[in-house]
Length: 168
Image (cartoon, rainbow, N blue to C red):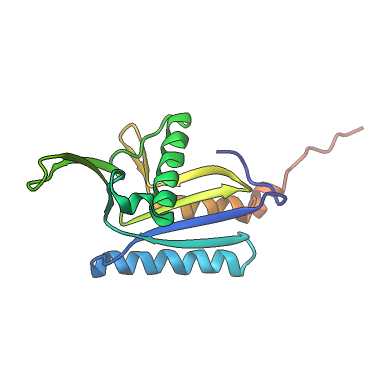
């Protein structure tokens, strides 16, 4: 991931599943508090919260709504990013085949994560969390920790460079 400069406009998008169990709601609230703090302190320009359901079936009429198209477009963008970054989102955006007992037709459903985070610099997608690289899972908490470190800048110890004084 590239280093962030002050001229970059940073926007975060948080996607949360509705009707999540209480443990997931507590994690969602903790992430929302961190995002609000980042915005209040001027570290990010904006954050956006989008509520989505448990799953989406791309073949239904619901997928043709503005909300459905937005979700499908974001998933496609996230998957394209993952491909370019040599990472995967498959364990977090699972697809399941389901047969209708009424029509006998098969449908593909995309199960949405309880929570997902996307970081944009301007209009460019820079990071999606959670994601997996090899056996390593990069969580939303991991991303917020890393983002806070990047935005805090170098520590005082890193800024103080010791240069030897040349003796004449």
